[in-house]
Structure formats: structure tokens, C-alpha cells
Length: 89
Image (tube, rainbow, N blue to C red):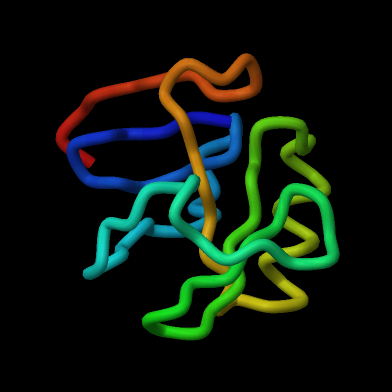
């Protein structure tokens, strides 16, 4: 997967847009409410579920986003399954 931190777009390796990350609250992962599911938390301000993408395959994440486009994603620039690309797209 590829992530552009300037535009906050997450793409597949084939340049398919997975999600534009946009959180008006900018909360830290540590400050979010725990859920029963590992790798998932909930925002107390918007009540949306946030999933950690660190251990996900691209195909699994695309499938999850098709099932629930309202999911929020946690993406770290240093995670092994993400390649940071800065371009004008």
C-alpha cells in the first residue's frame, strides 16, 4: 500500500484509492476507547470505529472498506506494509 502524507490518501499498490484519511479531531491512538476487537478502537467524539492497518494486507483492507466505507483508519508512516509516496496527486 502507498500513503501520501500531504494529501492523506491511502492507495493500493495498483493506485486504487482505498481512503482519504480525514479526522477533524486528531486524537492519539492511545486516547481512543478500547473495543472488544483487537486492533480496533472507537472515537468518543464521533462514535466511529477506527482500525489499525499495521498488520493488514492490502486485499483485506480493501475488502473491509467495501463492507464499511465509514471505517476510520490508523496509518503510521513507519509501518512495514505502507510505502510513503509524496506526489501532487
